[in-house]
Figure 1 (cartoon, helix red, strand yellow):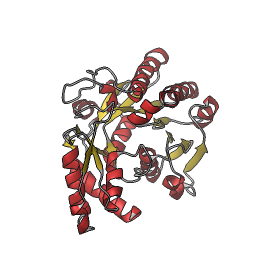
Figure 2: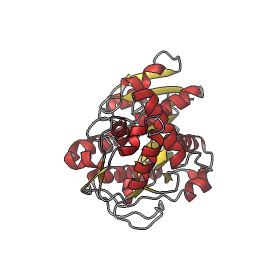
Figure 3: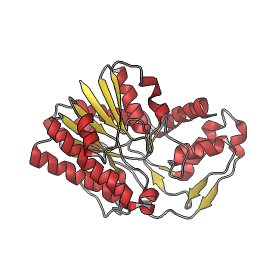
Figure 4: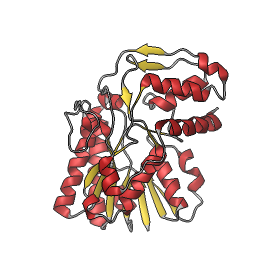
Length: 321
């Protein structure tokens, strides 16, 4: 079977690519390397079951080429980051909405069996209820959140109007190996890891009481595989929280980071932490209900936050120090 992974040179995409290549699938990656890295896919370039297409989902022609002969699309390509979308909403919309629509149309026209896409926990917006349940959302708090909600609306319309099989996975603060610690919009865990390794003080936005359902990459891989292979008709044409189902405050996260990193370098335990202002567009708390995925996809996450963080810290130490 042939899989197309858009954004396959990125953090989540390259992990999916590696996993499915190892399982013997034919894997094509479409990436424009705006946020992905050649180094993430370099080990795969010589494999017979791997193909790289350098292209952009904003170009419908690139999308049409990429989906030829494809059974499943795992659509990961997007411009992430709430702050980036606040700074430049037009480009975020072009990539995340227009690019998404291009991929849906190309997949429909090519007769792709199933379209699985990266949705986002940001869709819950100002909804205050915890845990977050798929059918109850609030108003978006950022341009990024709007784009990811529009993805869900488009996917639902393509399911009902054209008979496409679609599944959206609302990712909750995914972290793990290959997540980029550099750049203005780096995710908090790899950014803090790199700062601690350099004996620099990380800045927590706010008082540290905000909490997140941090989700290790291997749980995300499991969800993508389950969404791709499910034969349960009730599991199709809907969205699922993709998380562990537990929450950790930023202060707790930093404490664990210091504990795990100080096993490699004792001086890290003494690095102080700085507090700054809250970030615009951030939601205070995030916690997923994973009951729907457990019931309809037989999802059973294998890594708690602590287990995943230990794995991630070791990977960063081995690869970036």
